[in-house]
Length: 392
Image 1 (cartoon, rainbow, N blue to C red):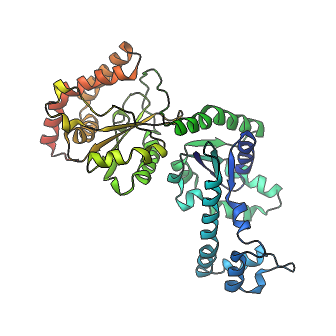
Image 2: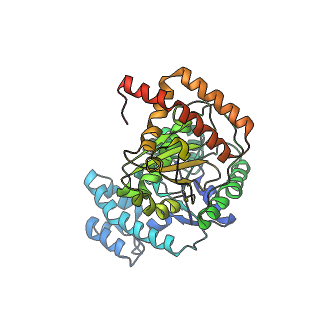
């Protein structure tokens, strides 16, 4: 099952995207609808609200009078906290139940307004943000009958664009025609969501593209942070640390692949994480348990690892799981630091990368050729570490 978090500010058009995804076949769980369901007449949630805030939160029919509740619940901070303590756990329980009921091959879309504010992003395989310029959103809200001042106040009370971009794997700009938005949603569904779900279900990584060196992408660091948060959540206490490594961490011209290193205490921990990491979107690659050829590794156990490759066709990434303190673990952290500091070494490595990319059409051959360069230059990297006092 592929879990997709869908969110966007008020007036952004998030509901339009949710409806389209449902039409395409997604199982959509609407957090707003669930929040209404848990306080329906006769529910335990409504009874608790009446007990806390009084009979005045009911209308003449006995249903929840939402404006009356808002006037009481948002009058002070403690009242707001009490409201959340009653409603949020019930919504979370109902959400978990609905997710468990979804078919195993679902693309499950959780439509949740406060995804960013609540810090839920690492819970999903992908986060989709729907957005539009503030003036466009205000105009839409005014056309729905909201005063402009109230519209801007509600927008200001929500997450900022910067906060949303930090967690967005997919950014859907909805400032134009709705037809354009729906076309982008259709493309997202067919080219990314459906293949990603199938890869997850079958426990396979996304197919690799031919090696190609591209210019540094300013988004690499943020993309790595999002993947790291998911890996940390999946690995739990077995994770010592997770780092962005490889060429994209320098950054320098490189293949558009995010390399991560998950540090564990033992290889047994690494093996125990095969299933949870696979479920999080990083299936293990069988047999990829060594970093360098034996002829350049006098202590093979120092170069052992477990390799996982992302199942997401839209964001190539590899995850190297290594034991803390081993040579391979240290080198993976050392090399990006060394390359950032040594312009000559960086240029030499880039020239080698370009040569390798031109000579080979598959990633395995490129990796082998690059490992040879690292083996030949490891002494220089270690000398730099000694001279600068660098430590992991």
